[in-house]
Image 1 (cartoon, rainbow, N blue to C red):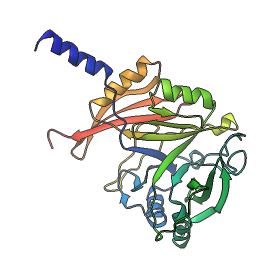
Image 2: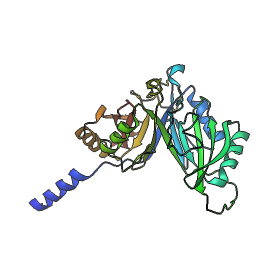
Image 3: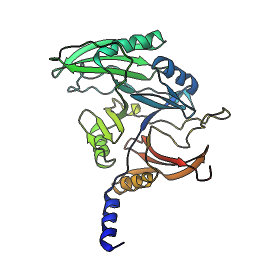
Image 4: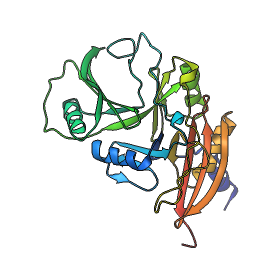
Amino acid sequence: MNDMTEQVEEKITATRRGKFELTFPVRLVSDVKKSQEWFRKVLKCDDISGWGHAAREGMGLILLQAASAEDIRPNAVPKKRADYPTECEGPDYGWDSLIYVEWDNLDYIIEEARSNGGNIAVEPFEYSHGGHSYKKAHISDLDGYNLVLSARRLQTDELIMHDPEFHIKKTFQVRLVSDLKKSLEWYSNVLGCDEVNNWGYARRGDMEVILQQAASPQDVRPNAQSSKIFGIPNTWEGPDEPWDTFVHTPWEDVALIVDEIRAKGGMIGMEPTESSEDGWDFVNAQILDPDGYSIVVGGMRRSSNS
């Protein structure tokens, strides 16, 4: 290998960023199995695993066992914003997940969820803003977390009705922060998000969150350490550190991401740590945002001795 080739490879390595791939918001619940069953029945999640997954096309969560009832705390109502694109100055309810659906499917999904035992906390309603029409409704899960269904269309568009379908387009995790401007700067400059805007949206690769200004410092509450689950076959015990978001990455990208975030002044809560279970090797690292929310980046591969 000549010197020029080595220099090119070093430059590629220096500039390549780690990939943020499949991402799961993490939620503390009172009973993982009951919550998984609720998501299977009410929101038709078909990926229910012993790792705490409750997922389907368009949405996914990792559910962890709360150590205490006090650790189950759905998001409070965010601070009002006069420029917020809603029916008023801002939502009158806490948002934990924002779920995008098609306009003509929202009512159908709500009725299907209701018929399967879902609690419709806010019935479908419509409003207009900036040339768009919006429709929203809220479903509360077993622990009171609010899943906000949202649809929008241009007011000039002709409304074309399609066959009713339980289809979810995309789901965003919603996070209350102590200083929205500072958080947006951190997600842009430190976490290196590809897209950040003034509505609180931040995205790096496949990780997408919506940041909302907390009305009170007490409303900013990252997940506590989850409780371990012992003695249940085919069930993961749980992590050794608090999780708020889990991001799948290629194995070799975990250390790359940690080095990148550290170089930008970000706080590393846990250095890359390896473990093995059920024929798989895992490597996880923890990044902490300005409010202490834990973003865990993790890679996995088949164990060499499996």
